[in-house]
Image (cartoon, rainbow, N blue to C red; front, side, top):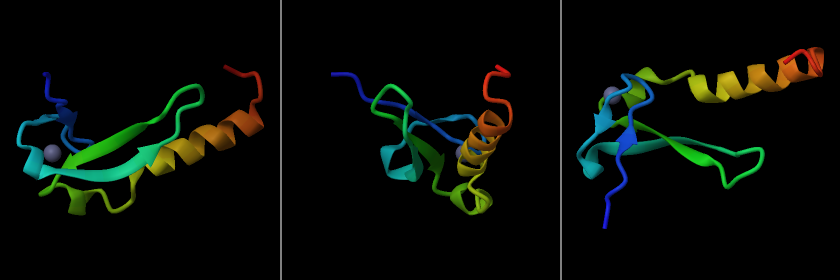
Length: 70
Ligand SMILES: [Zn+2]
């Protein structure tokens, strides 16, 4: 059985201690089950702006402005 290793959204380092992994947000995939975003418990406080959510919103807005701009 392989343990799933999460990667910290803040520092991009693997979170080796499961007790240190904090679920920051969940992204819905366009054609899949989506995925979770994790961060070290010590780094959650540095993700106040929820950069992933901001990135998703930007992506949606850009898709509306440039429908086929790829
Ligand atoms: Zn981290």
